[in-house]
Image (cartoon, rainbow over all chains, first blue to last red; front, top):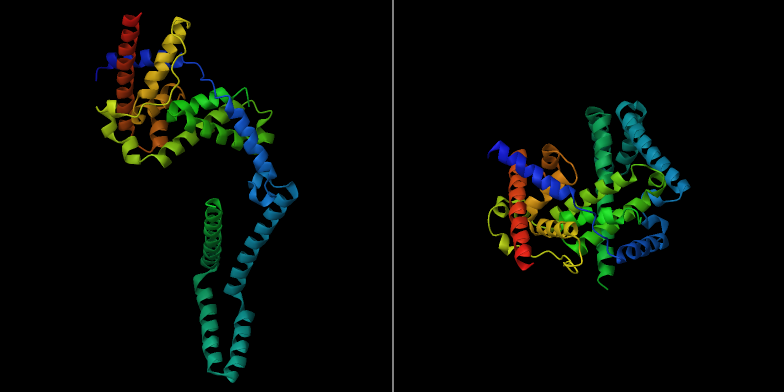
Amino acid sequence: MQPEYERELEAEIDRELKGLQALSAPRTLAARVMSAIEGQAEMAWYRQPWQMWPAALRVGSLVVLLVLFGGLCLAGQRLEHGEEFIGAAHRLGHWLSGASALGNAVSVLLNAGVLAAKQLGTGIIVAALVAVALGYAMCLGLGTVCVRLAFARR
Amino acid sequence: MRNYQNMVFSTAMRLVANQAEAEDIAQEVFLKAYVRFDDLRDSPTAGGWLRTVATNMSLNHLSRYRSRWSFFSELFSGGGEEDEKEPEFEAPESIEEELANDDRRTLVEQALQKLPPAQRVPLVLYHLEDLSYEEIATKLRVSLGKVKIDIFRGREALRKKLRSRIGEETRAA
């Protein structure tokens, strides 16, 4: 490719394209947008985008999410450093072991869980809990999509 | 909305080259703007925001609804342009009634719409949206070299189409 030819070509096309004016939008566009906005406004608040929720609900949802996150972090920390939790697990295991062989198995499982929690650390536990929450949300979302598709076909 | 509807529609139309799809995209852009109406109402950058959203939504639309292979493939860059689907574009009402500049703009617009997407999209992004080669490569997720080649071929194809159309018009006149 020759630079001179390229420059001349670029300048010509740039001139042609920059000289274009805006195309006229179809007359139906404004009406379509207004109708869609009205349709959206009639939807229940929880079906609207989060930004359109009432301010109190937006703040509330943020607080709930923060509390959940804080709870997860706290639970992870407790599991890691909780001697009392180990003791409680032992006591629970003791009570159950007296009842049946099933109790022994539960006790072993609980102890294993506590040990695993201590070994893994807070980060991994929180990550695992978040992964479970995300999995749950994904199932919920897929279910919603299926329901909407089912209704949309009617 | 009336101040920006032509700009938003033009942006979408020049990228997707289909009036119905461009109208759908424009509608989605204004719905997004409605959600952020409080921020945009008095913002001096509202026009820029709308233009960027229209561009991004058009590119998303193209990559979602057309096979990436046929869209960005080198195959499109070569011949076979005659096999391209004719874009839905309104014909000029009456050539005699329009001024020479309007005629030319209409011809450019039509020639642009007839380019294959692999050439038209980077060409529009470069010349009309003022993006750099690097920005286009990032947006289209293709190599910098491919962007440069597609734009060069697009310019050549556009000039060829324009010259042939102008020649036809001159002969007809």
